[in-house]
Amino acid sequence: CLVMDKELMTAERYFQEATGGTATPDPATLNLLGEVFWRRTKTNAALAQFYRMKGKQERAAEYQQGATLWERKAMDMYQRVAQINPSDSRALAAMAQIFLGRSDFPAAEAMYRQAGTAD
Image (cartoon, rainbow, N blue to C red; front, side):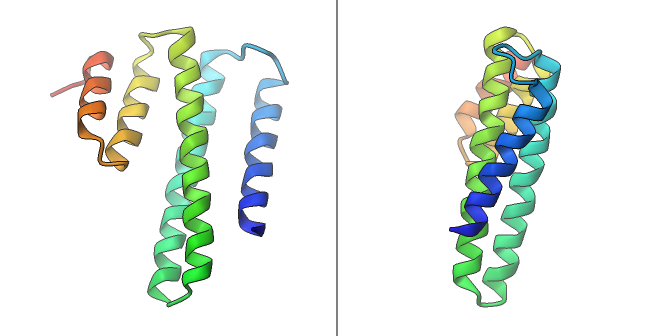
């Protein structure tokens, strides 16, 4: 589908431009990319909801697929940070937010605890 192809190419372009193609990008860059990708997730999800309300189910499905792709990319960036620095609270808290979005509350709680930001 056209939207997915465009989204995937954009994600790859962002990653290549930000990391310069290095095998081990720095955690700050990966955190920033994760944040960009997570924002794209929320934007695509909102557009999917908008098109569902307008009765354009096919278009809504395309944007929902885009949201899923961006979410996976965001999680990938944060997991890379956690591999480099397992105590990076920014990445851990961001992963917790993604788990909350998936309604995976036990995983979200574990990430918050690991990040030291649990209530």
